[in-house]
Length: 126
Image: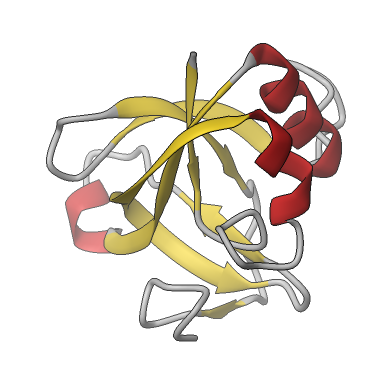
């Protein structure tokens, strides 16, 4: 099983959930540290890695999926993730839930310049 944190159109009931659904073994609520931005039809998660990250971080709510390898590949295709060092729309990185109880993959956006932050930290209540 592979853990993946989702926060936008892959969430249960959202427009792209069908991509992951056949491969989802379990779903649990979760939250990670970062900021959520509106890209239009989908959101982008930004992480901060500098020494002052705590001052920049918010809480982004979503769901933890346990998926098969096929599910991770299907999500990679949806997110235009081709692998490390490639020209990816999203990067896939390892992250830990805010409470430290879970960790896994998440898709993040590299440059949020000019994007509007979703202050609620939730795609569903933007």
